[in-house]
Length: 249
Ligand code: FPP
Image (cartoon, protein in one colour):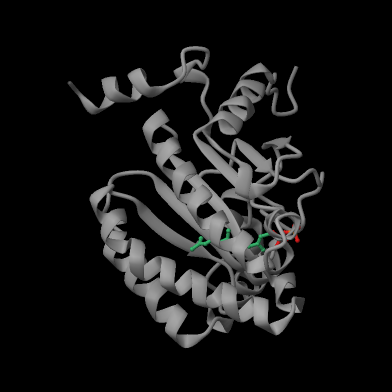
């Protein structure tokens, strides 16, 4: 049995393989509320959120989706209580350490986008290790947005292009969408076709502002820790009913 026929078998029958999104992005909202409703500290929601993300990554791979991007920590999240920020940094580091072996087995290519220099040094080292180790894997592209802000990403791209213009390396007339995209954190990763946001809020919250120009948005009231394969299936069904015209008729 080929890998491709395995994918076909596992994909729910009501989904059309040729109309699946190539790239899915997720805003994993609602961890704190999920924990609070159960009388638990917020961090328990984040812990559970990691398990949900792992299962979604596996599900994307099983169903033949090429790329998954998750918004793990925004530039605004530094404003949370220090205890929660420290817990999240520790959680990212621990998950990376624990999951590297499995990511290698499952051929995941992990990449991080965001201003990584502001992260704790030990986390930066773990990120570098995981990115390097998985760089040549041939499976799903998993991108983690950490200390990520869409506006900041655009500003840093402008700065980097302006510097090259100043140095005479590019002419202003050469600046087009393709060149601009090569200066974003996400250079080389196709734009998301579908962005799923859990827990009901209907906004982008500074996530992938450039990349989501024509991406489809799907919002569910389900809190992230309760987002399972069944919910993902529903999101994909809704996506497949959309008429994507990219501004054309
Ligand atoms: C939003 O819920 C969630 C976060 C800011 C953190 C999400 C991070 C993870 C699930 C860990 C991912 C780990 C790796 C290694 C990629 P919230 O706290 O804003 O919930 P609330 O809206 O109910 O308060």
